[in-house]
Length: 158
Image (cartoon, rainbow, N blue to C red; front, side):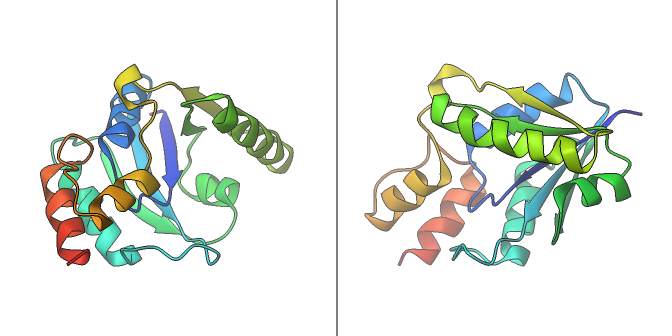
């Protein structure tokens, strides 16, 4: 069974994230969406809330596991017997950062490959930061996130 890790902060998970997930599921038997805990970020949703939002958004995908981790991604991948890390690339700026991370991860563990996937063009501009800002300004985010995420984010922004 080929397992991939799809790490991120997912604050919140967006339709762009789900698009990358669907593409990854065409390549792998199992995809573990995992929240990478990052002490330098100040998320809107805590880890427990994000896990629940992701579980609801991916309920229709039996080959998806939802988790969180703290520490090195390649060590987490080893514990899950994953052979790949999935990363979405929207623009050149994403590639530069992700390329450096992929090379470092390869140096730390050359048994885990990084797979870059491009989202549908309608999601190339989309990221969680933009979604949070639109929600903060009480804009309509229904085209950008699953319905449960939209409601949870609007409740947070009241």
